[in-house]
Amino acid sequence: MNTEKSRQYPTGTPRQSGANRGRQTLTFNGDQTRCNDINKTVPELMGVSKAILENVIFVHQEESMWPLGDGKKLKEKFDDIFASTRYTKALESIRKQRKEHSIIVREKKGELILWKDRVERAEKLTSEYDKVKEEKQGLDDEVKSLEDQVSTVQADLNEIEEKLRGVKTIKERVQKMEAQKQAKEDAKQHVFSELEDELEDDDSELMNWINQANEKLESIKTSRATRQDQITETSKTIENLQEEHKLLTSQQGRLQAVELILAETREEMANVKADLVSRGENVIEGNALADTDSDERWDKMLELKQRRAEAELENSMEENRKKLSANQAELNEVKLQTKQLETSMKDTQELLAHKRQTAFKLRESLRTSTRCRRSGGGAGPGEGAVEKSD
Image 1 (tube, helix red, strand yellow):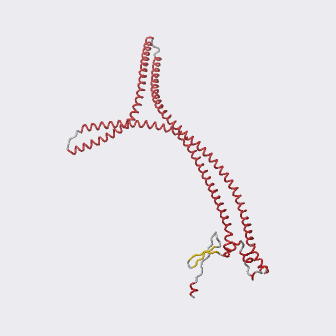
Image 2: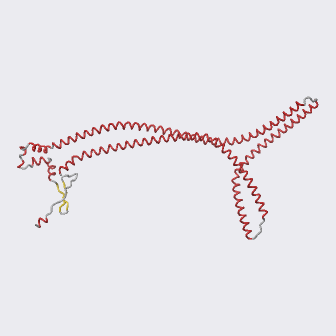
Image 3: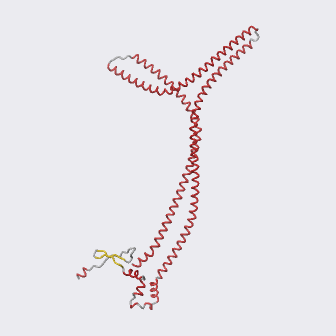
């Protein structure tokens, strides 16, 4: 009784490893023990199948007459010995896999043709992309050249503006001289008209008129020389005024700084005056008022000169803008063409990247399917062996 209670039997399920399928692990009294399955180990060591061991080598005496038995059982025995059922199943599996692989090969051939076409299109797009890139580089060079030309044109425009100022001065002088010439022509016509009206007079009167005309002519020549001198002096005056304008423009900043200093000085004087008044001292107000009037006149004169300078500057800047607009329009057109080419090149790059990504995905899918088929084909016999051992 006590012996039966104390006796314990091994429990647990056998575990098989990939390297040794005949081994199994049993649990006995809380300890794990490894042992070999004799039904699997003996056939492996002897190199024969289990059916040959059971029906030929280790057959019992009572069952040794099985070759003389029923035909159906005899067929089953021979099928087990020669493993004809497994051979038939393996042959059917091979035929099935061959059929499936032939279908896959046909599909992959079709896909290969399709991908060859896609690769050719990708190469064509790559060549087009290279051409577009070269065109873009050429346009970039043209844009750079145009920008250099714009800089040169800007320098030429500045020089032309200086010349235009001189031409404007000369034009004003020519207009004045034409006005003087017209006045002299009018005086000449007036003298001739008076002479025609008085041709009926005697010679003495005519001589007097001739003398008077000569005197007037000399006077006109003298006046002309005087006017010529005046024109020369006026030209010099204009040049001096231009220089003075430049000086005034450069002095404008200094005058503004002086104006700020004057304002600060006035504010300080007002503060000092208020301080003195608060202390009860007397301040001579006449001088202060005189200084204030002088400052106001000086401010008005500065404001007038500043307005004149600003008006001349505005006219010059307006002419500059008109001359630059044509070059700017051409530059904008070239930039627009460059932008269009960049957009086309970007679309081509995106399409090429999409094609490459699709090809990469298909390649990975083919590799994955090949690995799955290989692993599935190798696991088939192992799984059958496990089921048979169970």
